Image 1 (cartoon, rainbow, N blue to C red):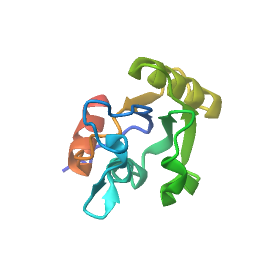
Image 2 (cartoon, rainbow, N blue to C red; image 1 turned 180 degrees about the vertical axis):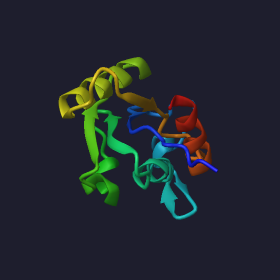
Image 3 (cartoon, rainbow, N blue to C red; image 1 turned 120 degrees about the vertical axis):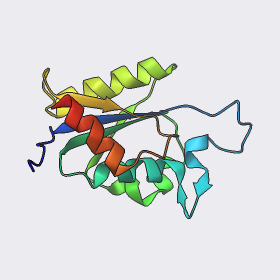
Amino acid sequence: MTVPVLPSFWVVIPAAGVGSRMRADRPKQYLSLAGKTIIEHTLDCFLGHPGLLGLVVSLAVQDPYWPQLGCAADPRIQRADGGAERADSVLSGLRHASRLGARDDDWVLVHDAARPNLSRDDLDKLLVDLA
């Protein structure tokens, strides 16, 4: 049986939203779930992957929650300024990844910060399809 070769990839996580529809005391990506914030669960799926070339999180400029997380100091995670809309945050993340060395032909996965349920198996299945 041949083991598939998975492509390397970059990740952009738009996380500048304020979660106004939830009416919580903080954006939903910073709500606690099983001992971690939702964004920490989201990042964990990507950070342990051997194909990861870089990860950019696009955050609100005045985000007071991010600096409180241990992962904020992780050198594998780069911060970019988020925008008024999700598309603005994604574009900012893509531009930042480009400054970090992402090439035009690199794969860049965009994954919402408040969607923590991506499994490693599902990520690998996606990467197999990209190869």
